[in-house]
Amino acid sequence: MPVLLRLLSFAWSYKWRVVLAWLCVAGASGFVLVTPRLVQFAIDSGLQLEGGVAVGSTRTLVVASLAILGAAAARGVFHFGQTYQAEWVSQRVAYDIRNAIYDRIQRLSFAYHDKAQTGQIMSRATQDVEGVRLYISFGVLRLLYVVILVVVALTLMAITNWKLALVAWFFLPLVAIRSVQMTTQLHPIWLRVQDQLGRLGTVLQENLSGMRVVKAFCREDYEGRKFAREAGELFQNAYASTRIQAFNTPMLMGLWMLSMVATGWVGAREIIAGALTEGELTAFMMYLTMLQFPVRSLGWIVILFARAQSSGERIYEILDAESAVKEKPGAIEVREAEGYVRFEEVSFAYDAISPVLWGVSLEARPGEMVALLGPTGSGKTTVVNLLPRFYDVSEGRITIDGIDIRDMTLASLRRCFGIVQQDVFLFTSTIRENIAYGAVNATQEEIEEAARAARIHDFIVSLPDGYDTWVGERGITLSGGQKQRVAIARTLLMDPKILVFDDSTSSVDTETEYLIQQALGELMKGRTTFVIAQRLRTVKSADQILVLQDGRIVERGRHDELIRRDGLYRQIYDLELRDQEEALEKARREGALTVEPSPTGRKQ
Image 1 (cartoon, helix red, strand yellow):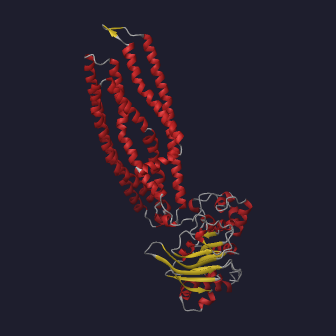
Image 2 (cartoon, rainbow, N blue to C red):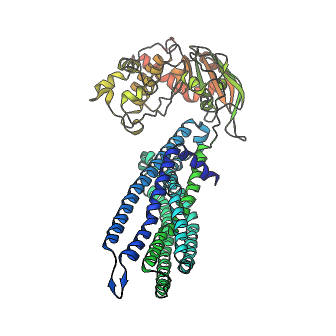
């Protein structure tokens, strides 16, 4: 119940709409319930028979008919208001919940997204929200309609004839109990269906995102079987649900028809005995017919409540999720950063048993470039992810201009950073909108200036639509080098004081690498830069090289200093960087490479 009550808090935001819906429900119920009495009046007063001759009043029949029409019209008006308001409130609740889920997902830290499955999140934002919407619309707002009909109709039936009421009441619990039993069987199946929809969405999302890998490895048949397996389990659960309903629906209908037959037979005997009029029996049968929907819908309403319970639990798993990175009350809003970064004995672990960094201390002054090298798993990426608080340190602290980053607001902290990653993400939008993603108010001149600095302007204007060219999903219509330069332009436009980027250009050709290096050189001027370095050109240009191994800094210094030591850097140089240096020297001797200033101003 707490989950169901919490879901009602979304509807309570529109309490006046809810009250109006309930008033419409009360009005519609009233006119529904008065109709059988009007029919009874028409039969008993307007269709009297004496000795087989009709002696009723035509005027009475006309008045009764007009009253019935008026009641039907009024019921229609109130029913429209009830349906409209209920749908309005339920759709607004669904809108609010979806926005709340999306907002919460945006604010959760990387630690949450490392474990979350995209398909499950999508299922909760769609299927589960729809379950809550139906609960609000039918299970809550129209529950009043059911309650009014059942209570008032049963009372009027008892007043009309208690014997007939007992006959009808005998069957009502049987129908209600069977409906609830059917719901009890359906509830766990519904839970499995909802979970299966999430798993199916995950498989589909992964397959579409990795379509190139699937085709490259000829795994279409395997992926097809995997999807078919998940879809088959979904079919089995959905089929089991349908089978239960198909078995129980005719049974419930049969019970109800049996109650009608029994009531009609006892009612006829009461008329013969003079204890009941024809009009009263007709009204009684109409009340019994009215009860069919509310009584049979009890099971359906219970299904809605059960589905809302499970949907609400899944939704609140997201809404109640605690972010590992939290902003302190009264956090400092940093307006302008100089870019002086310090790590003070920083340690970090993704969980209690998996330490990644141990006692890391470093210092980067404004305008300096720090290169991070080390074997895979040494902690390079973790270091740069701690800077903008994608994760929080386990021990020690990180400061910018002497301020602990945990004392800053997250928004102002992250505005200090420009991040260019090897795996560049572009949105399905125009090139202009992708470049201006972090500076939406930038002018066209500013966008073009950033593009020129990133060495991508000439390519953009060569396209038929120029800056209005749409890129495909994740920038699929652009090459790797083009995407990187768009990402560099995007970062340049933000004008960050601290730059973090993965200097991996091994997957592009020499000309593209040269263009990217020129763009990066423009980007790094006057900025504090952290580089996960894999290219000799970047390493030799660094003011400080940090060599990591097993989460510790084992060497630090500049290229010329470290190369003279027989340490890990020298091993990395001999294994990975020496070939690059020899290739550069050969290119220089052959005159194929122009000597350009490095990002820090030195010749390279």
